[in-house]
Amino acid sequence: MTESYNGWRNYATWRVRLEIFDGVNLRDWGWHKLAPYDLAGALREHVEALLEEESGRPGKAGPSLCLSYALAFLSDVDWREIAESMLAGCETESDEESESCE
Image (cartoon, rainbow, N blue to C red; front, side):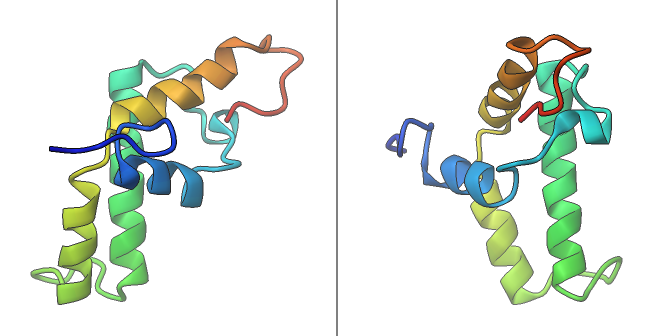
């Protein structure tokens, strides 16, 4: 059973949102018009690619032990919750006036 953490579904979701996506502007990436489901997938792919790059093993067969633990941690992340929170920031500001969409 997973307990909520700081208002988020769980610790993994809170930590990824805070440490990886805090301050990210969806408009900069052209992702501000994606549907929540599609954005959730894009966010997950981005983080997985980032971890592979940071592990120094991009494209190598089989993940390292550290990478496999990190990917296991990510399996608990509620990507849709993160996507919806980021898109909510886009909805509260008009397209022309907004510089941030976090």
